[in-house]
Length: 518
Image (tube, rainbow, N blue to C red; front, top):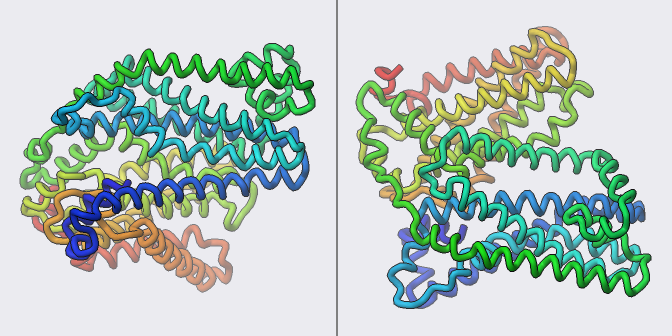
């Protein structure tokens, strides 16, 4: 993150005035430290809120069960983070500069970098449950074991990702798009399951009961199902048993560390021989004349589905909508399927606007050299985003129908309405972001659009969505003397908005190549 922010800002006059060669190192150190602190505080605050529910009830069993869920989350997010780390380092050839340094580079560099700068802040997710449990039981050992097992879980997640990276297609070019889609879908299904557990931990209750019925020695040795018991629920045991548990925990940690030592050299060698990135000129060589739209769609599809990291960004905003989606079918108003789709529109249109541009990376320099207007780029990007969103929205609608056991014409209206509104908001957002790019931009990343681009785009999306819904409610009341027909009137409003923006040259109108491609 710090490196990307530096690449985006390093050529600006303001940055050059404030950061020179002398204090550049302190700039990086300061920003890395602040990023780490921000992550740690964010994780702590979120899980303090979640754990406080069980702490207020003074229910140690429920707090321990939720603690097991937290460790599960740590395991899943550790795998996801390490997969992204490996693919990013390998695909972007990040370790290449180390080849020219006349010193022996430590083979632990990949793991140390991953742990210190990427994953160690995740350990803070287990602190709230451990501290709350200590406050209820005065068992300080819970905090000690929570730290040990948090590190142990992260190590296991790193080892699993390492094995996948080494033996299941270690080079990014050997990844097929279908395999990548399957891998990311499986990962996000696990994250979706975590959301369900957060919504109602009773889903996990039968697991806790099964663990409690196991023999004592099985509960100690059977990692990771022993986490609930060995970290939390052992505070009533005699001292000798507690000492044995601590020694066994340290033994588990030593075993995992030995496994890592067996893999570290293979990881290092693969990352040091990373593939060279495909030339941007080669990527854009097929973009010609009246085949502009098809060429852009093909290029964006390759850029997105070729790398698991980019694929994860496609599904990431969907996770933010799952908490709203869990209440589908239970009522009307803001808990209805219509508003659930609007939540999906809000999150995805905001996220995709930045992602669809950031995926260009250094290719933006070649793209700027082509005879294409920025409005045309926004048009092509929006079409690609529209295709992906349509698939997601259709899937949401089908699942909604299955959950609610109801199907009607209104479902079709809501689907078309959501897709139309998404296209409007996405196109406006991409146009706004392109206008914020400084002339001569040679590399696109998250920080190329300002200090807080996501916040700006999110607010703009809320405003556009609010205008659409507000006018729809007003039109519904005007025509039917009731606001209950907003799902139908919103589609009318969005079609009018779409036609209005099409008539605005600065928003939708494109050059002759766009017209020819259509």
